[in-house]
Length: 378
Image (cartoon, rainbow, N blue to C red; front, top):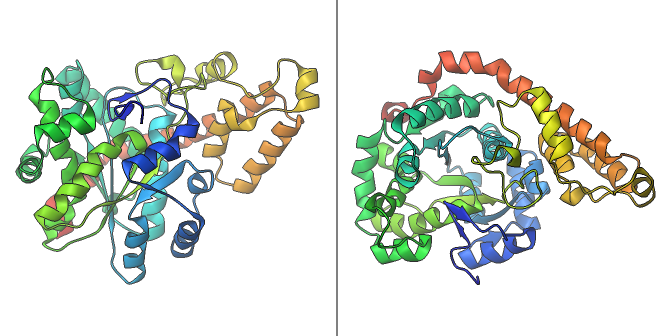
């Protein structure tokens, strides 16, 4: 890459474009999900998730090997996470929607790491704000409908003893020069930033460490998190554990059509606590459109749904691929106008949020049922 730090877990270049994904994934050492692998996923899962069909999850590391082991009876577990830096938006939920599907289709355990320590180290955040965002974010995530008996929420500061004792084993094999090279850190950065990737690696082998035998791990994540797990894959075999497999997603574009949704810019995305009127206003006023300037041009030439925020948001939330395909063709041909497409997306978002909200009270009252405990794996 022209700038080797174009993508890190804490910084993504504003100039990053769709066409760069495959190049970056390949340079990171990942493989593109090809048709034979899609067939394998569909055969074992009974279906192919729309996020794979649409190319949102587009690359992997050793997913083919993990699935081959699963076919032979070797069960795996899932690991993903969230840094509670603020309110959650739709872009944050995409990996969790997909992870929930994986949990259900393969009937496996899931470890969700909440990296509140990371946000304290890397951002100017108070512990009070982090505690509040941690609880709110956990409720947001679990309200998707994860199975409590197979879901294990690991809060870094609450499980610090467990994580630290395993993390120092990882840290012993990581040099400062490696962290500088991979993440672009400098001598002026605090030492917590250098150590943190050791903690992020722990959930990739924690089930194996607890149970005393190697259990394969599959990690769904957005491509900016790949540097962490590239290091994990180098270190874990030195500790006697298998390399984690991964399935990697693209970013969800911001309302404005470039970059990704940002927690620091409320007009860049749709937030989970946005009121209906706010959602409608954002879609109508800020959402990047693939439509034409006038109704006449739209009817005659059609739209470009591929770059249209409203359509792509609708497509992610619509579980029926055939229905989404019909809307795509009608919008592209000019049968649907831009304003109509935004209203279709608005209704889909509102329905999705209502389903989330209907589960929040139950999740809040029963959060302890989801919390990580080593005893749950024994």
